[in-house]
Amino acid sequence: MEPALQGAQRYWRGKMRSIADRRQLHKLLSAVCDLVYPLAPQIRNALVKRQNLSTVAVVAVKKVVQGLLTGHGEAGLVFVI
Image (tube, rainbow, N blue to C red; front, side, top):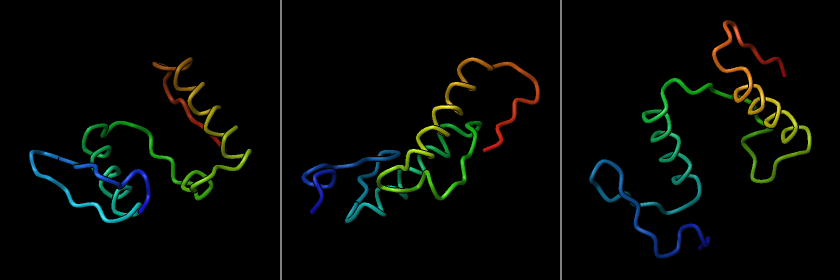
């Protein structure tokens, strides 16, 4: 069993959630983040959804985060990757 899954109890909305593997953990975290951060930008890129990010993906994510931190409030802020 993976270290992230050993001995931990996870609760969401007052109910204990059973997590058997990494896939279920990611699914729960994704649902939680969608509800908690509905206005967050969605990044739909296969390079980002990997266990180990490639150099290209790391650079792209850094550019997105940098733009979000420095360009907040700008109308029509768009990222092209």
